[in-house]
Every structure is written in C-alpha cells, then in structure tokens.
Image (cartoon, rainbow, N blue to C red):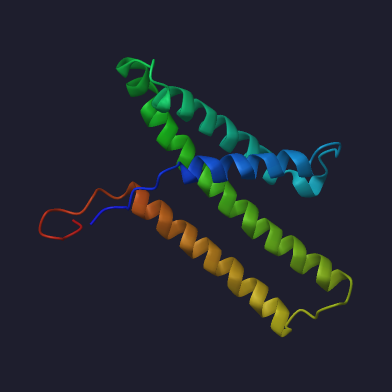
Amino acid sequence: MGVPAIGFPVIPIIRLLGVAIAVWSSYGASITEEDWPSSPTTRLSSSNWAVGFTTFWYPGGSKNSRAAVHHWHIFLGIYIYALSVATAITRFLEKATFLQSSHIISHYSTEALLINSLGILVAVLGGLVILAVVLPPATAKGRLL
C-alpha cells in the first residue's frame, strides 16, 4: 500500500502557509534573546525548502545539479530538524523558568513535571526520528540489520 494520491500538493501549501505566518508574526519586531533559536531555524528551513523546490521540482533542472545538491539537502534537513527539536525544548525550558520565577508554579508542581516530561518526550521522539532517517532501509526479510 502506498500513500493515496491527492489532487493538489498539500505539504508545499502547508509549508508556505507556515512561512507566511512566521513572516507576518515577526513583521516589525526586532529579534530578542528569546527568539534566537527560532529565527535561524525558520530561515534555514525556508532556504532549504527554496533550494529543494528549485532543484528537484523545477523541470529545467539537470541531473548533475540534483545529484550535487541531494546529499547537502538531506544533511541540512536533518540539521534543521534537530534545530527545531532543540528550539522546542528551549521553549519548554523558557516557559517553565518564567512561570517559576513569577511564583505561578513551584519547582515540583504538577505543571513543572508535565513540562519536563514533555521536554523529555520531544527529545526522545526527535532522536528516534533522526535515527529512522539515518538507518538503512529494512531488508526484504523485514530485518533491520
């Protein structure tokens, strides 16, 4: 079974919508110290998407240029994903720190434990996704190695 065919490209539309929302939300705002993880992640992701779009989807691209960009595109995709996971974990830590410094939650409250559990879950899931991308495909008999 494969992925069912959809009449229009869903992922590029969602990607463009996300970039438009990111640009719209940051319009007129200067980058503060809280935004340092997300700003390069968004810019690198947008540039990687643009290079991938022009290289792989553009019908006039040559096979040589696609072969030259392919490995760098995969590497940057994994790197940007790791940056996204690190940004999400940083945002969890930032939220917990602000709530604890404002004395809204205590250090060992249920909310603090939930935030820590979500951070650990995001880190483990991010590691498993990167592992799944890096591992070789399964063999014909269904064994991994």
